[in-house]
Length: 95
Image 1 (cartoon, helix red, strand yellow):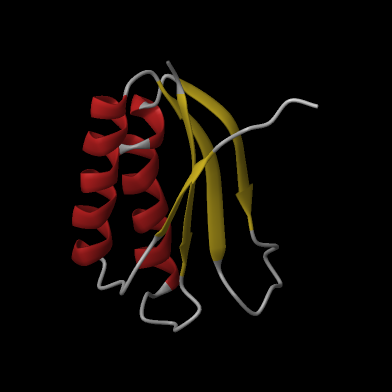
Image 2: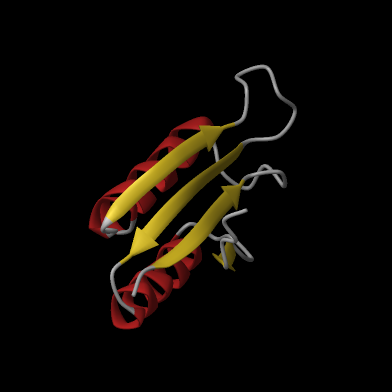
């Protein structure tokens, strides 16, 4: 059983300086993305975009792995003063 998740973060409220934003991304990557069983993609807003956003498509080998990653995302977002992160569990349909 595998579980696919889209994890999205942003800084549209400008709470984070550029350096803090870079550190936020680095923590997400180190603590969550690198612990997924598979990384399917990573997307970032353009450098001249009004908003700062990042999104990863991750695959987890088990529900327990996914839950640990979700809890880590909550911890990290709190440390970086973010109100939320988007955690979307996907149900792929192959057509």
